[in-house]
Image 1 (cartoon, rainbow, N blue to C red):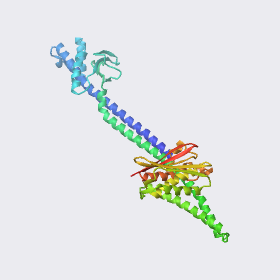
Image 2 (cartoon, helix red, strand yellow):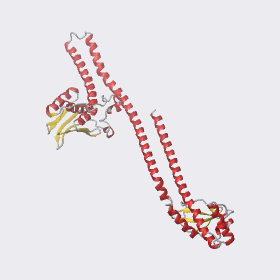
Image 3 (cartoon, helix red, strand yellow):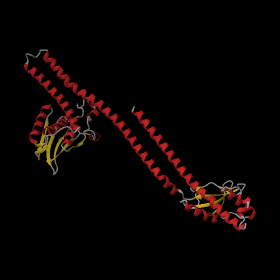
Image 4 (cartoon, rainbow, N blue to C red):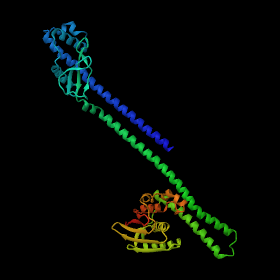
Length: 429
């Protein structure tokens, strides 16, 4: 479905671009025709004034009374007839310079560009004469107006630089069209990006579901197995073993409850519904408690180094302790055979910094960009299937959300197979 929507969107974009391009081209051609027609409408009048002046001089004032000169009453036919008779009877040809003076005056009246060339052409369009050499291949030509009854010669006008006027006419439309096209393109790109984001979110949800079920299956199995074993009565006369199974059930149940509570807390943090109880917190007992619990969570040897240069911080003790505990848990999970964890604190003018550094497997630069995202670890759930570290990406997102709720942040510095160091920034006010 995503590919289908993408293809339809791209096809719609192409169709809109083609239609918009066709519309802009037709608008441009319409503006070109309009200017050409306006200039062409002035040329017959200029030709009439020029031929009338010559005829009046050559025929001693009898020009307009001669039927063969006037022809019918239309302006174009009058001009054609007068020039034909003047050429045959008086051997007088059109004066292009005089004609250009009349054209210049008429074009100024209708506010058209006065950089033009007047040309005399034959019936095939070949230029016989022209009043200047300024015409170029991009000049805009009017239609030809005949000066012979047999249509063998004619006059046309070429506007040599009509494009400033054309641009003034069409630039508002072109600008609006460009804005529409850019907006449409931006919307389409955002739609395609949204489709990709939805696909990614669907994959993350699937990965998260698998990882969550996988990780919850083990403690649930332990709880069910322990409950059944206790219910069977086989250990009723063995209090030590019985107590061990009770401890396993209680520990696994607390683990599941902690996961559920973490999900609920993250949801509240994301929706700004969690109310923090900020107060001055003494870091020493908080860190001591975390260290003690960490020793009980693993059989590996752990060497803790604690150096608290700043011992008090303004924070919610419960959520801050949970955030630091998550970082320590990650250090243990992603550790080598021997675990060395360093917890330090110091301060600046604005922040108290709490650093948790380990000697574990490190984090690649690629993974550093996603580890604070919700379900970030779910994207690599294949590692879980192959015996890697369990979990589905809530811990670091929880830390990030808690820091944001405090008005601070969390950052990471790491080198693959060497170390990872997380820094909590907690505002002093």
